[in-house]
Image (cartoon, rainbow over all chains, first blue to last red; front, side):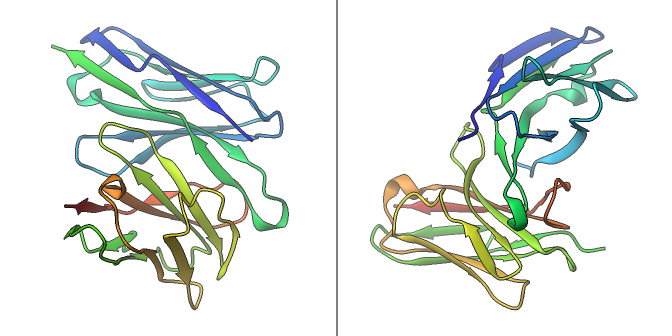
Length: 115
Length: 114
């Protein structure tokens, strides 16, 4: 089955610096890759997603890149701010045919932005 | 509009007791997912529903775990004869369904088995 690996497990950056989190997946049929942010004690929330027909997507300070050949995708946060501190999860879809897709999540990255 | 809701928010139970966790998805969302998140860990897939059908139960950890969904809406996750290792936050999510749509998460139920 699908396996999603996420690195690093923890990441500390200085406020204003960039942060990059990387994920790899194993199933070449995966075609949807969302990123979720989970603040302490709160529910995960989608921050950006990308589909396999594009290589890059950007939304203000957040961008995601996808390399289908290498089966990896990355989250880039520029000009980090203290409120970016949270756990970030990547995920890859598992096609389920007529029953639809499910997501397999990475183990998460704890991002700490130091001010 | 209303988001995904879950109840109870917290549940403390004794080892060996049965518990039921409830999820109310966003109205109109046909897909519903259950995940388990242990302290400081990632999201472990348990089961998902498309309408009332559960095409994938592969994530259920043991036969003590079961889930149902009736009327294509509310879902309950039942854990029988709870064990201490069942302690975790149980998250429910819903999406418009079928293919590659954003999953909206509920606030979770924190289960503590003493």
